[in-house]
Length: 191
Image (cartoon, rainbow, N blue to C red; front, side, top):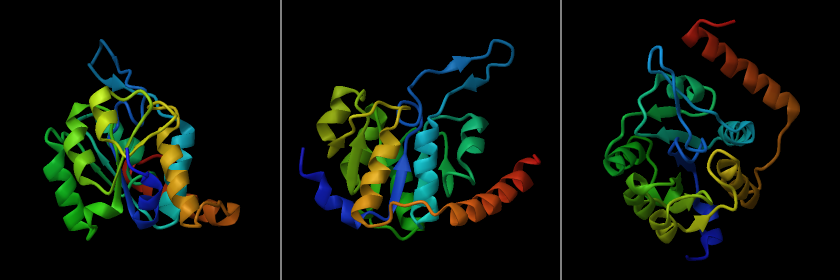
């Protein structure tokens, strides 16, 4: 594992897997309709919001297909949600190209075998404490936090702190949250 802290200065964007990174990996399948339920950590969510407010681009790249994933992250926590990504490397490369990011400017957080090609290509490869051993072997940084329990917040805080952007102005947060909530309500018809 290299000294990952030197890479923190170059980061402009974050991309995350979902299951095992933003969740603990547990999935409940409802017997009535087969919907899949996941739980998410609110501290990870606030870290994502602060990064979003500070101008970082956030993306979800997941093999999952549930509309609940899309609804959880877009537009409140991520600029884009890419689902059903069975081969994540071309998806990641397309994401970088479309958004004018060099792969070296993107943190990717993954926890399992399908994430390895992206972890080997991105600028800062991160995994949760409970990632599989093969992922740990290719990661620049192994969070002390497990998936779904703060590993996302951990790396976001580190990047923003080293770049001097880790703070929360309550008035700015309230205004930003109001605007983003209005967009969410327009999209999903909730008030």
